Structure formats: C-alpha cells, structure tokens
Image (cartoon, rainbow, N blue to C red):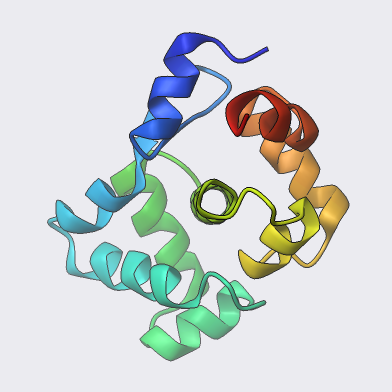
Length: 140
C-alpha cells in the first residue's frame, strides 16, 4: 500500500528504495562534481530507452566497465545497475503519469526494459507496490 510520503516523493520526481532512501535522479546529474560520473549519468539519460550493455556504454565513453562501476558506487552509493533501474522506473512512471491510458508493458518497453516480468519485479522492489496497484491508486 502506498503511504502519503511515497505519493509525495513520486510527485516530486523521487524514487524511494526499500530502505526509504530517496534518490533525486535529476539532481545526481546537476550536482555531480565528478566529470566521469556526469558523463555516465548524462549518457544514461540520453540512452535509457535503448537496450544496451554496460560494455557498450563504457566503450562509447572511453572507460572500462569496472572503472564506471566503481565511480558510480563511490559517488552515488548505489550500483550502476541499481541506478539504471531506478532511472528507467522513474521514466516509466513519468510516461504513465503523462498518459494514464498507456499500458504498463508499453511504458516498460519505452523505458528500456525488454522483459516485462523483470520490470514488474523492479517496480515492486522500488515502490513497494505492483504496477497494477500503482495505476489503480496513484493514477486514479
């Protein structure tokens, strides 16, 4: 069940993880003092809807995968995969809010999730509710 705090966080563009810690995804890019982290976050914001591997991203940016993983973990305190999933979920939520008639699997695909079941698992992990509950309760 969604509590008031979660609804407010969603409205402000934040995602709460299972520990209740929120990450403001846009703030990560704007306030990063690390050039590599800024490059990675910008690249993600430009390519999140595509299906890509971390190896492809690293190659495009000219860094090794391990270097990127370490920089993100050190700077943001979350893994690169966790950040990418959070970002994609946020984008899917934005799409659903903008177009409530959009089907869940369409939002999942448009935000870079190629596996609908995995999208549902990640969605529930970060928001504490299913996609169906989200559409019913938050997008009323």
